[in-house]
Length: 390
Image (cartoon, rainbow, N blue to C red; front, side, top):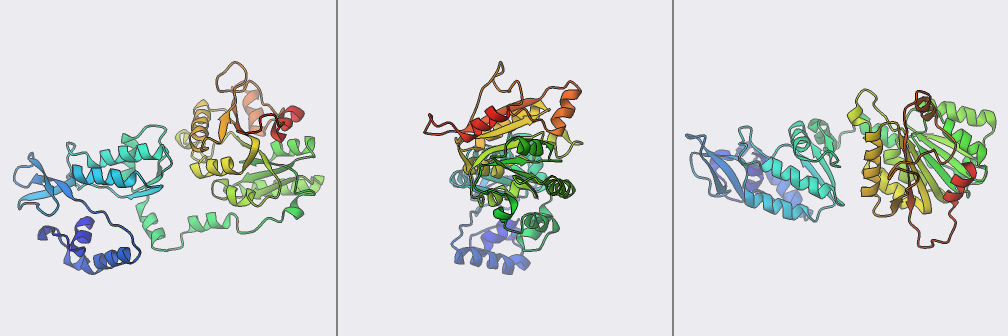
């Protein structure tokens, strides 16, 4: 029904029965705003319609030629083709709400076809977000299990955000990194190469690494502020000069934090990402496309990414995402008997969770990615990290 109001305000002929005259002023404002900002509005050119008096009878009508006694129930084939053609050039897509009427038909499947279009585009370089319970349910049904579409079921919160309301959750993310790190105050030598542990937890992995490698600086990024405060206290207590921790959501702040560091980024580790133990299907959600792209961009030539999990499905998901979103900058290394997994931790330093998993006899699934380098003869710093610490 919203599309009919926009079409009416754009002086496109539509059936008078579908026009809400009270909505005309607001629709006119939208059309004027789009025109003033050179934004194209694409409206439906045709509809699947159902006969009021014979509900089994369906027919496709041009949007300006819908006959009396027929009710639109879904987007028509010409409209879907036009949408698909337009979206093929997009880098970001947001789909808010369903595209069909409440009494739609399984025979028309406009929403399902759109979901499949978005699924294919999201596998390329297009960032896709779907908003609203109905649209999210449809995408879940129609897309592959490895689809990278972002889904937000609470449409009302998105509308409030788009209207400019200050939402507590968004403000919390913005506050996660409100300051500029003065690296000279953090490390005794801020020009040393940097190792970043994302989701550093209680910091035991980084503390042991920092003790063994004085020639490197170590940074832990952790959302749990209480754990970060404990780690910072330990740094002060033991006089560690090459270690630091930041309470932040690395998914949104990794690029802004690490890009300001004066030295090289030689190693990034992500270990056992399980943000929600009660919902196994959500365990990999912390690994978002934006974070992977930032890691791939900022990692120095020859640098490494170390990934591990005690859940094989999570590990496979991480492997798939890094392979897909690293923009061909990262290449997976193969060691040992497995095509994917490392037989041992290459650093000889285990995180607290890794120790817990191994103590109960469970397997760990580990892998290494390397940033490709044109100078193959150069011995990278990150290889040196593995050799010396290992």
